[in-house]
Length: 213
Image (cartoon, rainbow, N blue to C red):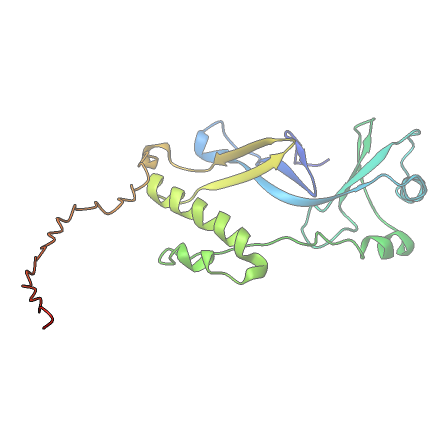
C-alpha cells in the first residue's frame, strides 16, 4: 500500500502532491501536511499506451492517455506510478528493459531555476544573461514582493499561468509574520520654474549725411 494520497491537481509536466505523514497521536505536532512538485509525463500515442499497458500489466481497455509520475525524482523507472485516463486508476510500475530505455530519453527540458541568498540584490537577476533575462526579471519582482511582505522563514509557493488565468499558492509560512507593505513610490523630480530675464539694449546711432557740393 502507498502511504501517499494524491489530493490535488495535475500540472503540465509536473504534479503537486499533498503528503500526509503517519502520526502516532492526534497531536498537531505529530502530523505534518506538505506538498511537493514532481515530474510527470503524459503519453497519448496509442502504440506507446499499448506497449506500456502490456509491460506494466494494466488490465484496462480504451485508455486515452497514460500519465507516469516520477515519485523518487531520479528519473522515470521502477517504483514510480502510472495513472490511466479516463479510468483514473494508479499502478506501481516495474518496466522491462525496452520500456525503461524509452523512459530514459524523457526529460523535463527548458526548466529554469534561480536561487538567491538573503543578501542578494534583485537587480542581480534583472541583469542576468540575455537568454534568461526575462525569467530573471520575473524572479526579481517576486523577490522584492516577498521580502517586503514576509519577514520569516520558511515559505513555499507555486506559480502557474494557463488558459488566461494566473494563480499562486502559498503554504508552509507563519501567518503572524505576513504583513502588507506597499511598494516604494518612485518620486519624479519636481521641476522648479526658472525665471529668465532678458535685457534689451537699444543702441542709438547718430547718422550724419553729407551734402554734395
